[in-house]
Image: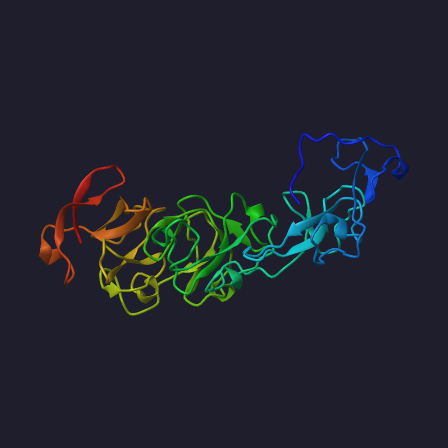
Length: 321
């Protein structure tokens, strides 16, 4: 049910003043005055399926038929109530969302692996938030080339604040997160953690991804490769470890192990510098690139390119490509 604004409604003192069937007299908009407005009269109770709010007789006054928190190819709707309106008292274990409706509890799947959106469901404060699966060829953006690339997929949500995320997860800031190619990605919910055992997705580690003093579950290199060695995924780059990415240049079919440095430009290992660029789709990339004087400074298959590195002070220097 969407919000109704700038609408004339009849005022009332009792239900007898409301002539329309299915309407009762109550303070529907919490302004201290009573008006005739619809109420649930059907057989549905909290959590039951519905088509319209009037189906939700178990809720009564203040009934809402809300969209369920799933990718809405075939949206499901459930009975709930507008917090504090009419007869509404959120059931035990339910909470009041930022949009002012009662939401039901659910399993926190933020940070679990996925193949598509249908694999991800989360208890969130905003039931109109759609779950996302960050995975290669994801349909989350106008072009799949712009979508974040995550090996094995990562269940998450767009967010603006922690309240948008499931319990046990939190919202990040722009520039906090990176995909497997080293691209900075939009603010998403990430699973918080104390140690690696709290991270359900294979290949993730528990570390301070965004350098804010808190730890999150995010991909970490664990394979045999190290800086500048060939890779297809950051998980292969155990010599990099935390913040590992597999950096592709242009149309290269083979990537090279590197480290995301967008939140810590000084964090690259000795001989490397944080290189900032924007790809053809307008996505920011921040990865550690080896500084060089000539090709002999670079790994096999790479060459020293003048002014390749773009430093954060807008100067440029030679780097291995």
